[in-house]
Length: 151
Image 1 (cartoon, one colour):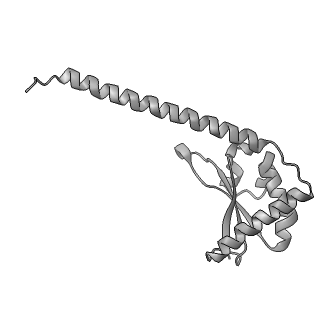
Image 2 (image 1 turned 90 degrees about the vertical axis):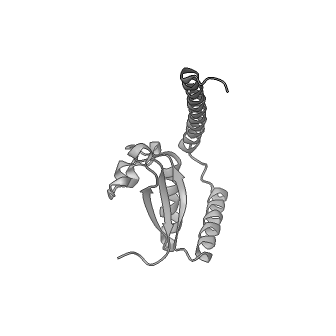
Image 3 (image 1 turned 60 degrees about the horizontal axis):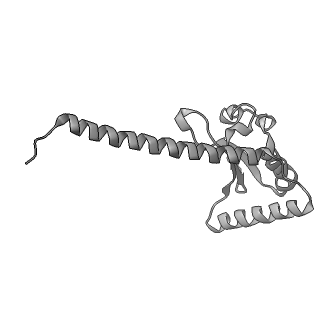
């Protein structure tokens, strides 16, 4: 039996931890790059011509139909980084009535789409923070609802 060497064992453990840390850092960097790409994409407005509106209505129709067929009366319709609000989601998180004024980019367009095309059909829109990385507000979700209004 070979002699046990505590220092060698500590070195092995330290090397394993260093590899884990390096892998986690690479993973974080890749996630950060994806998030930046998404943020850049969602910051750019879509062309809102008649065809785009029809496609949007068709997608929403399919989404809510599928949810209703599962017995649901609400669906997460759109999720976006809180950086697309002027206050990083604070107004939404605390339920301020004028939270829509904080929207920018595509989320603002989605809100306007709801106002113009879905609200008149009876759909309600609820915005809420859907995750809290590090205890701080993260992504925002827009939920479309069509069931009875809560009292």
